[in-house]
Image (cartoon, rainbow, N blue to C red; front, side, top):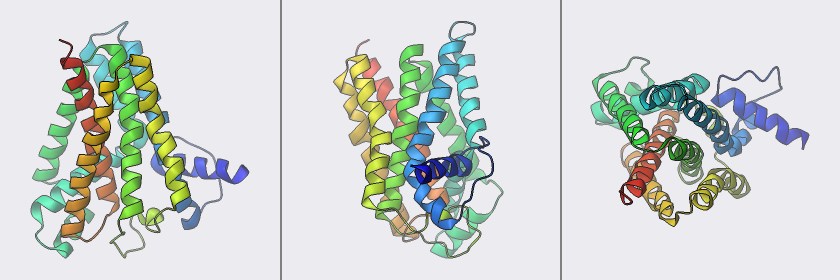
Length: 257
């Protein structure tokens, strides 16, 4: 149990900006901490949902949504958004594996990354804007957990392609075991199950095939062009899956109007 507590704190240290104090860690422990990546979604999702719901009593919906999005970005240090922008630049401007990896390694953001990230954030904003505050809060919680589990499945099924030791995703390059995937699945899927019960709407199950389709597309794209994943690819997968969940909630809400 003590080791699991260390692994959880390691995951918080690696995937967020939340201070956890000094804990012993190495590449092996960082790799095993990946099982708790969806639990990080519990932390960010619940915090963002509380900000959004709290703001609904004192501010216009748009302000509450922006503050909620700002909160999530601050908690993670834009870790996943940066990956999405880098993948847009790499796959948009590169035509060989070497060129794509080189572009994604560049810390500067290009046109593809800027446009892609702008459209992504706009899609998130408008999807949440057209949801009732309570439903939007639930959607955030579900999106942040399910999307991170989706990224974990990429680690399980694909190979890490970078060889440089200073890569930010090097700790997850060893992959994860079936048992670790099962634990990640619990943290990733439980909020969706709870949302279905809470909102009494089984139409929310469309989140699963929709996210699977997005995951299939991202996995196919990575495999075709670079032969596996990088840290940026994982971040991009998480961001796309998160947005797809918001879109699914909007579609479910729309069918009742």
